[in-house]
Amino acid sequence: MADTATTAPVAAASAASASSDAPPFQLGKPRFQQTSFYGRFRHFLDIIDPRTLFVTERRLREAVQLLEDYKHGTLRPGVTNEQLWSAQKIKQAILHPDTNEKIFMPFRMSGYIPFGTPIVVGLLLPNQTLASTIFWQWLNQSHNACVNYANRNATKPSPASKFIQGYLGAVISAVSIAVGLNVLVQKANKFTPATRLLIQRFVPFPAVASANICNVVLMRYGELEEGIDVLDSDGNLVGSSKIAARHALLETALTRVVLPMPILVLPPIIMSMLEKTALLQARPRLLLPVQSLVCLAAFGLALPLAISLFPQMSEIETSQLEPEIARATSSRTVVYNKGL
Image (cartoon, rainbow, N blue to C red; front, side):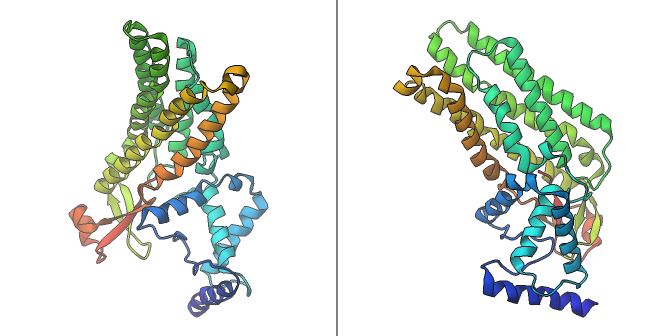
C-alpha cells in the first residue's frame, strides 16, 4: 500500500503536466508558496472564493473522497493535479481544518465578503442616529464573533461561556467607542457641518478595530490558558504550547486591525469625492447603490490582503517554545493553526 500511495501522486503529476500548469499536488499543503506575501495572497484568494458557497453536498463528498483516495494510494488513473488542487480548495473552504465539520455558510471565509458587505454599507451610512449606530455596530460584531468562533483553532475544546464573554465584550467596546466618538464630534462646535459629517464617517474604524481586538482576545482566551497543538514537519502532534497560542492570537489580532482599514477608511474618502459629481448630485437615489459597490470593492481587496499577512499554518522554532516542546521533537521548527 505504501508503494501505491507513493506512485499515485507521481502519476497524477505527470498527467497534469501535459494538460495544465498546476504544480505537483501535495496533500494538506497550500498550492502556492506560503513563504512570500504573494503566495499567501493567491492562497487566500482561493479560500475566500465565493463560488465555493454554491458547491453541492455531492460535490463536497466527491472532493473529500478524491483526497482520501490520494491519501491511501487508491487514486483512479487519469486524475490530474488540477483536479486534486480543486478538491482540496473545496474541502478547505467548507470544512474546518481541525474538526472536519462543515462551517455554516455565512461564517465561512468565502462568505465573509458577500454577507459582510451589507453590514459595512450600514456602518458607513451618513447622518447616523444613536439607534442606528448601536444597531450596525451590534450587527457587525455579532457577525465577526460568529466568524471568529467558526474559524478558531479547535484543537482544544472551548466552553460556550467563552464565546458569550467575547461576544459581549466586543459589542460593548464597539458600541461604547462609536457612540462616544459620535457624541464628541457633535459637541465639537468649531467644525463646520460638512467637516463634522466627514469626521463622523471615519468613526466606525477605531470602534471596529478596537472591538475586533477585544473580540479575538476574549473569545480565544482559553487558548492562552491551555495552549494550542503544535505539529512537526510530518504532521505529528508534538504537544500543546501556550507560547504558540500567544503568537497565534497576536497574528490574528493584527489581521483584524488591518482588515477594516481599507474597508472603513477608503469608502468615506471616495464617497466624499463622488458626492460632488454632477451625476450623483442630480440623482441622489444612486448614492446608496454606488456606496455599496465602493464598499464591495474595498472589502474584496482588503480581506485577502489582511489575512495574507501571516500563513494560516504558522511556523515557529522549537527553541522559542516551552522546554518540554523542544525536548519532545527533533524538528527545528513546528507548525500551528493560528486560525483566521
